[in-house]
Length: 91
Image 1 (cartoon, rainbow, N blue to C red):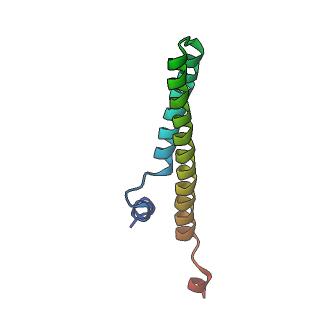
Image 2 (cartoon, helix red, strand yellow):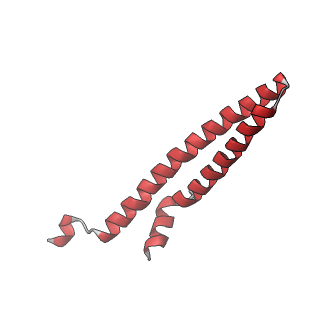
Image 3 (spheres, rainbow, N blue to C red):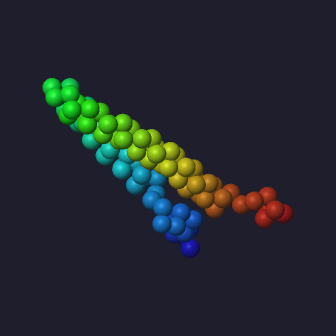
């Protein structure tokens, strides 16, 4: 089994770190566009709605950032393990 297949096996159905990064950056782009839109709004109800949406996006971005870091760590750990055999195996 090659390195990528082993990583896929370890992660199961979870997304890879690069996929999580793409999702996160997409949400960050959307958040930035909504911030611009918020500045143009004059209706307080619309401002409130958009502010709530921005808070929700901030939470989603934070979760994706955390998942990206964890998944990246797992991927690196698998690669390290594959390329650096345990000391027991060297004896």
